Image (cartoon, helix red, strand yellow):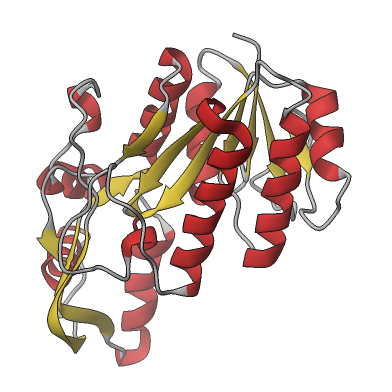
Length: 271
């Protein structure tokens, strides 16, 4: 295996992916704003997605066998960047792309969980952008593009955990919803899933996440108890009908280690 390029390696998920892949590969990453957590030296490249020359220069310098796309930012800028990236990858015909997408590509049809073979139908701006980017990348790269859709991602001391403490500061309340059902993943699980895709050359669409799901307000209550939140107060917002942000899979070839339960994920992020 040659080089791997992780776009967005300074982010929460991207940094976990880079760390995992570095165990057995030569991995380069990108960042937009340098912070104290980034090494002064090493395989980290500054990336401005608004620079039209950036995709070509990165690919020419690194010549990656795999590109892992885990970027954030303004939607139209991301779309333009990914389109240029895909076209520059045509110059490296052996290269492959793993694009990290989201359960939000199904947020127009939230009345049920969704599987890999379901056609995306989104109504939010974020969901529509991700669905459009998936379609564009498949059109440009065909079988050289693998999609990994993510549910709500948690981790030890992750932004979502920290926000629970912030919401409670100075007598505040934690915002939650009734009738919202989710399945979840950890940053470490996503990193392991990407490693599986890279090592096996897996093609197509994959759904990460727990094999079961949970009411969102119950998830927050259980996590709050496990991390020691004292007397949490909640602002409960009611959905008129049950809403599912749940990704499930019919794939039987995915290792069992990548198919945890909600209880296992809660244990992993709070122990």
